[in-house]
Image (cartoon, rainbow, N blue to C red; front, top):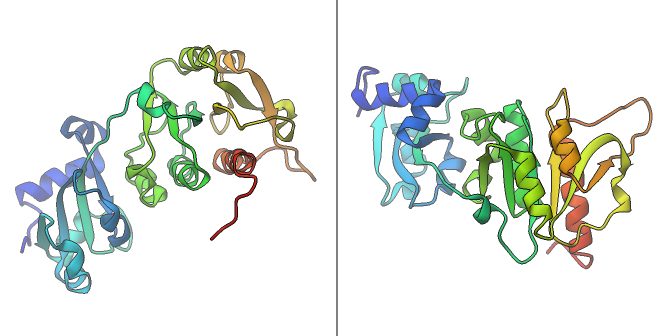
Length: 260
């Protein structure tokens, strides 16, 4: 059992937890909690650190996995949460191209520009999987998808939804428009999103929580859409607005959908 924070593996893990550049350098990210641990694809798993108590409760999940037992004190040091769940894993990063993100017979893509809130990004990724989104494009200035808070908020969907960062999101959108995609930008002065058909290759563009979409991305979009509001509410936050749009696309694409 590792009982000291001075252990080389623990020092490296703590550095990764606190420093995005270090995570990128090692080409890994961190996953915390038994539920997230249980969803790690075997091909991406590097190593797990677990307390004896957690290991005894979930012994079967660790069969065939590379792991180290650590003391409660060490777990407190390597955990990014106030109440550690007893297990932290190192996982290889996924690398997707724009082509991989946008492939498929009838793609549904989320294009996210300069989102800064980790909870928003994580929630969008999780909801995207539930709504049948096939891929996510992000501008370079969007929050790090491997930020521990983002990873937790995805609840495992980060392992299953293809995504990538791009240098110029507007240029990518314009190129996809020329390849039979239709792009819809969320915009307060747009037309009601209920007025459009999302059954063909579709891209929804969501902008920064405070500033919205850039002029370049608004110009690149085929249509500007808005979610009608009642009362004194002017807009929804990025994750909520994304959810509304994604599930309208799901409804249209699965008109006979019934939950089994």
